[in-house]
Image (cartoon, rainbow, N blue to C red):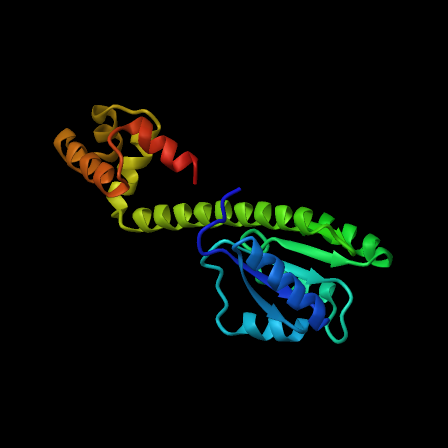
Length: 208
C-alpha cells in the first residue's frame, strides 16, 4: 500500500522506549508521527484549536499513569473526532477486555503487546485510509452546505419542486410565478449547485 500523502500518526504512550520504537517503525514505512508521553499532553494538544485536516490516526496505550488511554478515548468521543481520527489501542494481555469494550464504542482496533510490526503498520495504514475517506465525506458535505446557503429562498422553492420531478409549468402554477421566472431560477439553481440536470441535482442532494 502506498503511503497516504500528508498522513499523521499520533502516538500516546508513557513509555519512552515504546514511543521511540514506534516513531522509528513508522518512519521506516514513510509515515510521519508525533509522540506524546501522557494522555494529558495529547489532551492539551487537542485544546489548542485541534483540527484534523489530513488523514490521521492515534496509537493509544490503554494503561498509563495519570489519564488512562480509555479516559482520553472518551474525550475523543466527546470531541467528535473518531470518524476522522481512528484509534488503535496498544494493550497488554490483562487489558484486552478493556480494549475490546473500546472497540465496541468506536475504536478502530487494538494490538496486543508484543505486537507484530508489520501487522501494526498495516492496521495503521487501513486506519489512515478510513480517516481520508471520512475527511473527504466531510469536505463534500461542507461544500454542499455552502452551495445550498448561496441559494435564495425562491431558488430553494424551485429546487425542491424540480427535484420532485415537476415540469416548469407545474412549478410556476404552485409558486404562482411565470414559467419564464421558473426557467431563470432553475438555471441559477443548476449553476450554483454545479449540476446540469434535475437528475444530477437529485443525486447530489441524496448523497448529502
